[in-house]
Length: 393
Picture 1 (tube, rainbow, N blue to C red):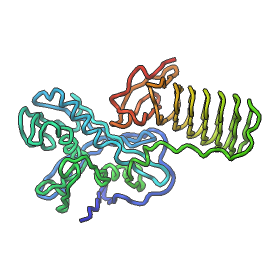
Picture 2 (picture 1 turned 180 degrees about the horizontal axis):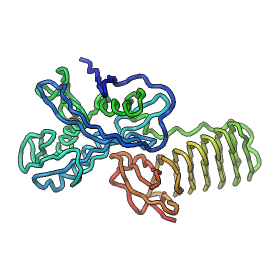
Picture 3 (picture 1 turned 30 degrees about the horizontal axis):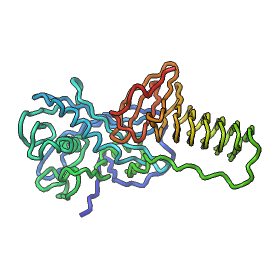
Picture 4 (picture 1 turned 90 degrees about the vertical axis):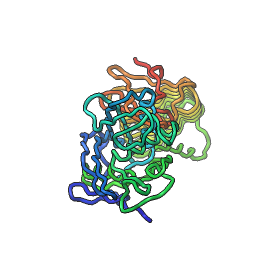
């Protein structure tokens, strides 16, 4: 039985997978929308409130849910529930406008004031529902994270998928989070978020697999095979889209305007993309790389490299060696694909900047630098980020 997710918002019905198109969404933070509606379409007469805050930071859609815990002291379960929900829901889906992919990120906060939900914690054995959680259940202690993640599914608008539950049009299945607590989270589970994001921006968005959004970019192709020019070159581009290469010495390569591709090759090279959406490849050696204006992609390669994408929403890959990722105010929303503290990688912050982890999952962390600037650290759990990684000028 196919499950066709339809969702009505302000009288308009949106369907999962609607073809998207048109210009990209704005690459700047937008106002947060408070989602609050009564879900009354389920089988068996079940009704519940769906509440969360939906925002857009220019790179991803952010779903924040605030939960107040009343009743018994959950102890260590508090952390288990929060991490379980975020790890099972994050990294699964993105929204596409036909031009770019925007991951859907979930942030669950246990708060004392202004909650979306108040959940009563019960000491002892019992059966979970959305507003009543137990310190012990028939599922055993290893399922506490999945149980919380299942109930969180209702909080963001999802139905049960097991017989006798709050199902939709009699749909049941097995092997999913909303059916039998397995880790599978199908794309249909993000229908409410998609519908309200479409209502917020007044345009269709398609739900897609987040893997395409989170995957590190492929390195650029090697430069054309030709005789290697003399060492220590100074190479300047034009206002067009240039492909520029160094040699075996310490080269200085400057792209100027246009969407340029710069190759340092061997040596301690200085690469500057300047205006345009540029791709910089340092190669072997201790390279200094500055993307400049535009949304740039920087690959350090082998060596102790300096990577500075600012300004623009840039993607930085240091490669092997102790790399330095440089930031100042106005750096935009960057992604670092391979941060490795053990190799000596560090993030350098400029005057007036700070760092604070504000979102993420078990496979990535979103770090706020203030002034609307962020860094996404791929491959690093939200709770693993350390202060020692950040160096303040």
